[in-house]
Picture 1 (tube, helix red, strand yellow):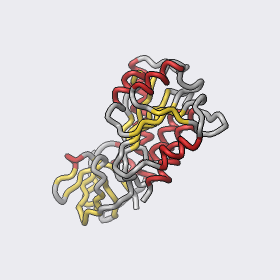
Picture 2 (cartoon, rainbow, N blue to C red):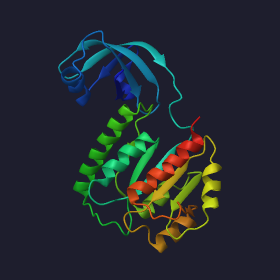
Picture 3 (cartoon, rainbow, N blue to C red):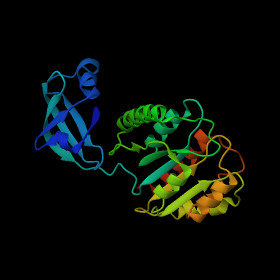
Picture 4 (cartoon, one colour):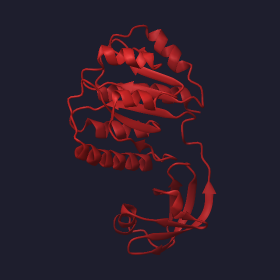
Length: 246
């Protein structure tokens, strides 16, 4: 069954209105007809609405609610990925896979060693692109919520955003003691929020690590091998998923 995300105001009692690019996708790509069933989710609450197409309009589709289905498809903790901006189109891959692995929000971070420098206009365009990729990945993986991709922030702003999180991990190539990494991830409990900081190519500078530690982040090792920036985050998210998945 095809799944689409809507905003709360599009759910009006027993009527659900689908707007935007999904209208063309439903009508001209999927070629759905009146009476066909689909799944609609409120992208923030995660509630799933099973519907049937009632009317195919020019710029909107009206669906009739059949029933509301509750599912425990989300991780029992909110996981935030703070990703140092990588080169090329790697961020698109990172966003896609992070959503598939259960990340609740993704925050692109302009760390000191980032090669990519985006002006405000380019950053806005990139963010819109990344959010579209997140939505497509959320549909494909049947996420209950639509993970948000934040605008690009400085490292200082990222630490500020992570201030209230219960656990903050920052993989660092000079960190040692894999047993400590196992202990921290193995100790994660449902309901505790987790922040994961991943450096760009070249990693974080020592000063950034010190500031992260002062803000409560714990440097951890991911093993004896040096992982690429697009691999490191997926490794940590996979371990967290394994630990928290019910």
